Amino acid sequence: MQSLNYFCNFAFMRPFMHLAVVLGIALITACRPKSELGKPFDRPCHELEMIDSLMWKQPDSAFAMLMKYTASSKADSLDEFDGHYCQLLISELLYKNYYEQSNREELLKAVDYFDSICCRGELNASAIVFLDARAHYINGVGYYETDSVVEACAEYLKALETMDSHFKETELKGAKAIFMFLTYNRLLSLFSSQFMLDPAISCGSQALVYCQKEPSLRKEIPNTYFHIGKQYDMKGEKDVASSYYGQAIKFLDTSTLIYRDAVSMKALCDYQMGLGAEQSLNTIKQTLSSAEGEEEKISRFVAIGAIFMEEGTYDSALHYFEPVYKYETTTRVKIGIAENLRVVYDSTGNQEKSDDCIRFLVEHKKPEGEDNVMVSKLGEKYAIYLDQKHEKQSEESRKKTIITTAIIVIPAVLLMILTIILLVERRSRKLLNHQKEAMETEKQAHRMVQAAMAGRLKRKNQEVRDLKGQIRQEGLTSGNSTASSFVEEPVCHLIMKRVTEGEFKSKVDYINYKDAALNKQQLLELRLAADHHFNQFTVRLKKAFPKLTNSDLDYCCLYLLGLTDADVAALMQRAYNTVIERNGKIRKILGSENPLTITLTDLAKNVLSVD
Image (tube, rainbow, N blue to C red; front, side, top):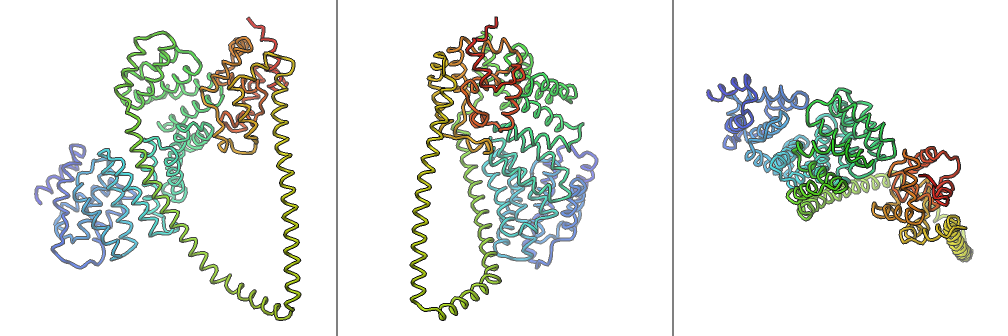
């Protein structure tokens, strides 16, 4: 014990010299469970309770307090419960003070111990359940530190399941609300790292609920907005991502890294939704000028290079991508840059550097099967957790319904039955049968009328759809054989078929039409068809109106087919308001007040005549 006191005094003076490993060994020795004492449990040790309470507000002070306690003689008299409780606190405070988990073996014993007494319903049920959930959470942290992602996910979900099973939502406040936030936040990070974006968004949304619910977590709201926005960004839903980034920017300190990240990523999203390249580049370059360190600069280089690449300015893209490829150490980021560089090198004819990128990708890109197996396991565990949670919610709903029925519905039903009995006694059976027959006849007639009306409505709807498709096609092809042959292209047939069958509505969220979305290959085929039939239509259009982006040209080809804004929104998977804004932007560039379809058709027929 004298050597342990010496260590503690030394650790206070030099906290960063291998503290995690040595502290773990010392605390394991000092806080070993004393099951042989056989002391009956009354309540947790007062000193440990104080450390626990302080941990949620000041983990560094709680850590110092725990070190002092374990160096005292009191630590030698802990009973079995307090011994395991102490081990749990050791693990939690190591993690909260950024040290690795060094008491792994003892923590696993604590997990089993709290599981066993929680199942038996011993002691203070509420306190034990919370400790059990915390033990599983911190066990998951230990697994994650050793890259055991599936096992870590299982422990985090077990922690949530334990809390869901024993606490009502109204009870999850204070330390419990903080714990729920931390657990959902860890799952958000875990799922995001595996590109499981929907589960990540779901967990992020739950974390946000607890941020807004618990006053001490309000400072986490903008960070959570930011991380949810990143998931939508990776998912390709740029308008939603931009909205979340905007919410984060409102509340973030402008001097922080995460603020600059949010501003930069929002600017890139806005560009991808149609904002001019110059404005987005200026915004990102402003954050670059405030960068604090090479890692942040590399992040900004990636965003700037992506815009230059999309604009076809390959020399500028190389200027930003090549330093990232050279100095970036994160394999995932470097793989993405290598893929972009390969495209640029191929376009500029630099075969040697293109081959270098290919070799890197072959060496570092994981086989799809590896990731798929892990993702499948994680998805299965998360689905099981959601099923159990929904089942619990359904059970609670059923119980609530039963109680409501017992209090309100049953007396009402009894009164109704009594009324019916009295009515039946007063009326003759013959009159009652006559009424039933009349009602049945009336229902039958009503059903026949409804069936006839439904049939007529269905035929009318089909006629409208056929007429709509015919008008679209005839409006484009009338008086122009070149336009007619353009419409006959396979990709144009495919687009018109989706439009006719989809009956896209402006008030319906575009996500509901995701099966009709056009991919990059189909957009490329459409552009090639327009160029073929209208004498390099997009090339000449770009030359005549250089402010048009490549994305704008895709929209022009769709409007050339005579599509409506609602059709374009569904096919491009963009919000209807976003498409309206893009339509107005293109008309402004073209200098025309006429509908875009008419303007583009006139330009196509006149073959632009711009040299």
